[in-house]
Image (cartoon, rainbow, N blue to C red; front, side, top):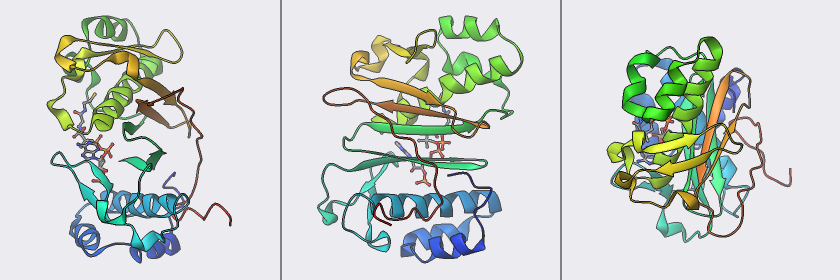
Length: 232
Ligand SMILES: CC(C)(COP(=O)(O)OP(=O)(O)OC[C@H]1O[C@@H](n2cnc3c(N)ncnc32)[C@H](O)[C@@H]1OP(=O)(O)O)[C@@H](O)C(=O)NCCC(=O)NCCS
């Protein structure tokens, strides 16, 4: 959901959906852009999940694991519905899946974060060599394509930054990208599917998914924070 047209009416509608703790967190934000991202993603996840189950947006309840990964609270007794969230300048995203190991990450293509300094910490030697041979927007896009895919994988695993992402190597010369994991990762790379989407022209969206049976099928949808019901 692009944030360009997240106007006062949509903000008010999202505010009405927040739980007590969500409202508390919302009120505590000092940064206005961060507050709006948080609000939009809460509206987005609540109304999106309601497209798939007969639960109204304000009735969803969430819990988090010890690393902060949010999931649908067990008290709702919902099975086969999972999600991952990401927010950044100008865009929030919610990936919904029938299986648990799903992760999404979004970044603006023009984000200025000192890429050359970060590269050694997040790239394998092979990825780093390719990155260093590039320049301009291609270099920027290469960086954020890898970054969002690695971050999506970290989020799908749900165990946070303890994962050494340098050891999650992605080959972008094939489409879709193929992953190779170092021994430090303790996971089988062949279980995972990775996709990179350019949905707005200004952002890169990375998705990582371990589909239990069959192939990953993605249906991208651009929406508003108040996602209408499927039968609307
Ligand atoms: C917190 C983290 C999961 C993602 O942070 P991020 O990329 O800065 O922010 P995003 O907006 O993409 O994601 C935040 C959302 O991820 C979810 N999240 C938080 N902890 C999570 C976890 N352990 N597992 C999965 N999802 C998690 C939450 O929904 C959170 O949004 P919310 O607090 O509004 O509910 C974590 O990976 C992190 O801090 N990353 C820092 C960046 C970095 O060093 N990346 C290196 C990878 S190349």
